[in-house]
Image (cartoon, rainbow, N blue to C red; front, side):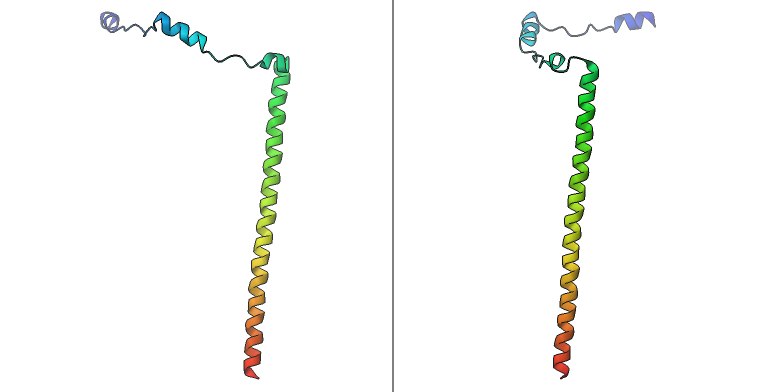
Length: 96
């Protein structure tokens, strides 16, 4: 077993010096989060506040959608009952 594993060992790929230098040059620059928040607790508080704001916004949008859906359904029901009344008025006039 020891002999087989020693023979099957493959070195991890290594990048050329030129590639490594280019990767360092084009590395994403820090955006200043440490300076912006000053502490990890403040940063986490910021994230929590954003999550809470997103939840409130989602609820408001859903309530608005529900309201619009209710208005649409009530107008459909009102229109159907108006058509039903109109049909009955026509039948009463035909019977006369």
